[in-house]
Image (tube, rainbow, N blue to C red; front, side, top):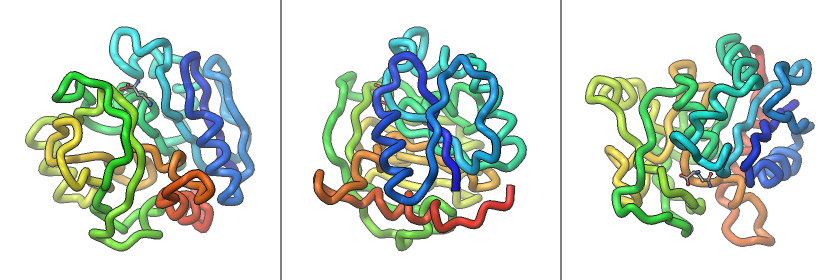
Length: 222
Ligand SMILES: NC(=O)CC[C@H](N)C(=O)O
């Protein structure tokens, strides 16, 4: 299995994400945002956390217009897998590859702490290592994590079982306590909490490991 981790000016979780992929058995290439192609035969693209382009305009808005993001779009449109974590989730929303938007946290403060999440669906190649309703602990570190969308999209996300994770308790004001969502074909996951920072038992809780392990076990037919 081959992963590509995108790197923007201001990314700061790119290496953590690469380590989590590698420890799960992936071969990983780092790809600079000015490149216009992904390496050949990439199975999954990781869009990492951080502060791409200093979070200017809106978090992820400039990164969404980088050359590599067109390649990401083509990869996803071909049915390829992608995961966007924190700033990566913001980038996926800004590209329109996932629906909705992330606003400033309801409390207007940067939140940096481990949070408990409910696994809201186990029906995806990202979450099938968990049980439905299981709780997991991943860290969050964001100021713009307040997920919102219109009523119709929210109803659709819920009706199509596309909410992947919910905060067990309100953290940042997100509608329906949504922490992460899936694309229509369930091959793109965007989430604010950081599974890659909870993937090594030597460093603390390692609930994120099951996500990368499930992906590594996925037979990709894209
Ligand atoms: N850790 C991150 O990816 C930070 C995300 C984003 N720049 C925010 O603060 O909302």
